[in-house]
Length: 309
Image (tube, rainbow, N blue to C red):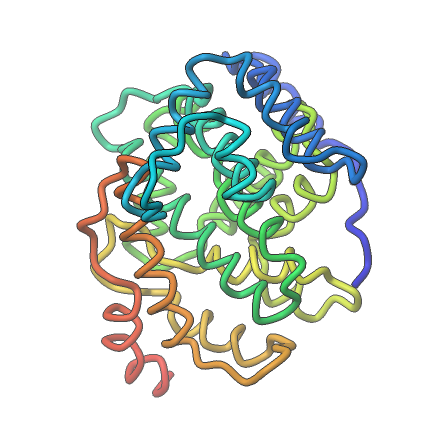
């Protein structure tokens, strides 16, 4: 698969992000991310910046000792946790905590950060599950990008207020892609905004590129050399939000799934069951609400209407 390439920043978005109050990514997270991408570093190296951040270390130990992993003995040190979970899982956990610690809450009754966290986690898990079926080595990168794909939305809600919330509400009510409404209204999309935000934070360009291109999965599927992670993230973007009781983009999801270059035949339903189970377990470990409708139930309910369209 081809490597993602950097694209010039949109000046309109640069102006918005320049005035938005967005804290820098915590040093611990940036060091962990850099170390995880360095083939000469190991679990011991990765543990050092986490140990230096007492809050992150405590959260990691609480996470690794949760029922999600089911270790019979208590894990008492960060190096032990890193060795047991592996560099990719630890990096994803640190990024999850760091990102949601710095992204501002819009403090709007019409926008729930709890729902947003649920949506982010579920899309990350689906991106990983799809990537495993395309190219297993791309699975963890897909999870990270899937988790971060909508990270600019709270920033945009806070900046534009009711005007942007109206686009979100219209998207969900009418089944029109949010990115299409954004493009028509502002000339850019939240995917572009998220990509630029990640570049500002200093995240690797491949992750920023996978986030930047997620809003048009059909176009990406038609792009020669599109990476497995980028494809997985884009298809995962078609998931419904926890706010929705119907999967309006089911037909698009099914159509995109049918075009994926899967390594082995696999059904969408089996993939969604895997994601539902992982979400239930992981949401509990991360203290995220998990009582929304299951993906496989929404998919099954929407399957007949999708097939007839």
